[in-house]
Length: 331
Ligand SMILES: *[C@@H]1O[C@H](CO)[C@@H](O)[C@H](O)[C@H]1NC(C)=O
Ligand SMILES: *[C@@H]1O[C@H](CO)[C@@H](O)[C@H](O)[C@H]1NC(C)=O
Image (cartoon, rainbow, N blue to C red; front, side, top):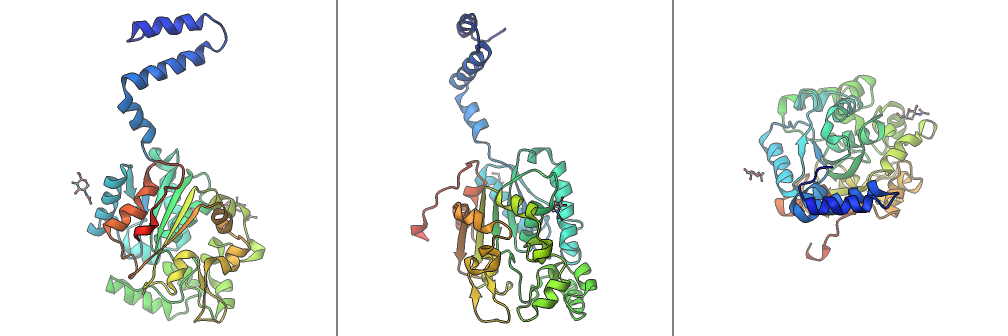
């Protein structure tokens, strides 16, 4: 065997003569040699973080300046390979394509990206979080999701229709809503109808909603253990809530907290919901294993600044397989 370091080569050959396990010892020696000659290289290989993807909210597009900078900021700060995944044609499909179809498209994309094969982290923005969760739960044969950082996700539903930034699309959305949010036409043609959950109309929700009851394993007769197994297999879940969120009603939905039936005033914290208590999707399992971090920021929907991103999001995009420790005292 050729070696750039003759001295080491002869030493490993000598060890090889001693019998069994020589290949293993040779490999160890070559590795030790590599470390001593190229320490920086080895460190770089070992610490290359998993890649991450960004899934955006309603009305947004990957090519928009804000999202582009957000993604680049995370890339710069984490050192990870990362990119925003576009679903269909962007803003318009984020409004009008069913969320399970959106998740199917993401599922197909992540399966095709070779860099993601060993697993990846996800950063979700708003509606992008329920798409992300649908990818984790429903994507057959997809690469594993490691950390999932959720910023302002309507995980337990929303009791109002999300506000709009693109007016023409909003008018169309409004017109659709008037047809009845749980009608099959609206459920099929208006993405956010998939996570609307009106607390005083739950019977209609269970009957008509095509997305969230399935995602949250809410209906006993159709509950699927596979969704739970997949969700509880992620490494770490970070749930970021914006306390003055005017888009998500109530803001605590970002933590899986929600109203009880027929009650618009009391918000149950996550651990008092049936989803948690009966562990429909594994949230309780993750939480009891110390693998959920609940974070609350003051301010409106997605109002997060660079300092907060650096402190609360970027650490989960670095390679550490263990949850990073965060110093809460300064926040
Ligand atoms: C990321 O880093 C590149 C290269 O240093 C720089 O040009 C760019 O402005 C940075 N972007 C952000 C959003 O930090
Ligand atoms: C549960 O979901 C898995 C994965 O999508 C699927 O293969 C399986 O058939 C589902 N089980 C039931 C009982 O629907």
